[in-house]
Length: 259
Length: 303
Ligand code: SF4
Ligand code: SF4
Image (cartoon, rainbow over all chains, first blue to last red; front, side):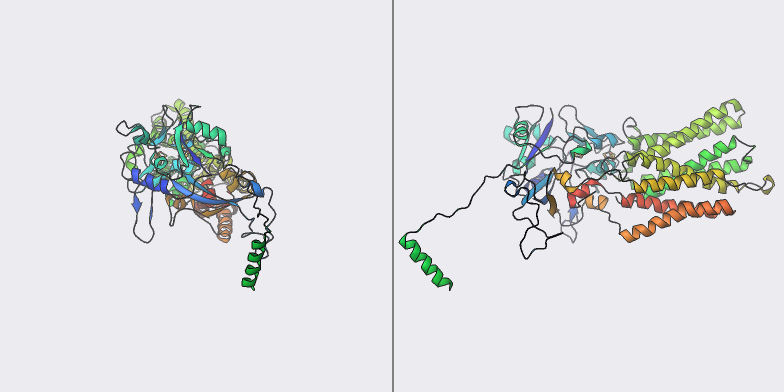
């Protein structure tokens, strides 16, 4: 098995519900624990297994086909033509929730000197054994995706467990044996499944939609897929041409009002 | 990357200690060229071991959970950090074995045990460099020059230090001749340092971080209101003018001044202090200037 997530960059609205659900489930769990520091103070911080980042993309036809090739600066008189603040109108906002990708070439595991970090042979989940970890941060250095955060209270590394303590739990009803983030997502932008099974929902989605290359050139082979945005439907705005007597009267009144 | 003082001290001091160990052992095999009495030999070995040990101990200071540090010796098959630990612990019995051999008159075994110590010391230096050099996530480090720098700088500072240690010998042994090895390695060191500075291995962009093939990406919001572990560990930003100043300081202190002092004066200890101080600055820059690709996911355009 090769368990992982498929995250839809098209439907994600960036509401952070997945991160909150993750924090709720894992905050005090046996598997991890994700502490907060100074939660109600001036500079709240803490460990999150999942963080959502927001980007704007302009000029890539895959993201915004109507404006493809519009790398020209926007000719609006009030906008500068060069540099920051130069806008091509109608660019696409993408929200990118990021957690451990459970990479196939998990370099974070290779570099770990203690063997605390490991990748499970049976399902590919990458985990940290808190009873072995010495808190050297080396694995966090080796992760390109910022998926690992040190728990300063316990002195050990923490990361997404793919809710390994939910997905196999026979006490839970079957439809709830999924990661907390997947269950929480209000737009169903997150899917969970086995990438080794070509019939699984995640495999199908990744095949149909295509996946974004997230620093694939580094060679980590992430298991999670970020589904590429779909081409939006072409909408051609056109006003119906009406020229009855009443329309003319309305137009006349409108013009009077605007005088 | 955040420049952690414990790691900076560790790499510079244990590097110099290991270099000193290597040169002292090599010098002990050529009494016709480098005259060294037994007391000086032991003093040099002593200094080397103290520096190496102090460095290794300081490297454990940055561990958040030291009680599990013993496990760090278990993954030597895959992890350079683990390999470094294994070789570091191996060094002490090897040195002890060598000292025992030269003491108890098994002179025929001495070259064999000595080579073991030298190989082990070189291996530690190389592993330290590979800890950083093997990370594809930090392009600045991800080159063969990183381990080469660690080995050459270790041998270099060790050679400068060895000249100082040699000056501890009694006057009747005679004056010290120009320390050629130190000069050669200082020259090699500066060439390697410039090569490292001039050749940036590769760059990644914020577009490649999101798989955007054309067009431009910019960050709208990073998603957190205050610092996180990631910004703390990888967000270090060095002001450019400060970097320039420190760069020239490190070049002067680590290479140029020691070279001049060793070539034209007898101020060996001053040269050593400058060399070590310069390497501390260099090592600080090594961390402060390296950037991790996760910065792309925090809005930086190129890493
Ligand atoms: S995303 Fe990071 S922590 Fe997760 S498996 Fe990949 S390299 Fe390791
Ligand atoms: S912080 Fe823990 S899990 Fe990460 S490399 Fe160090 S020992 Fe391994």
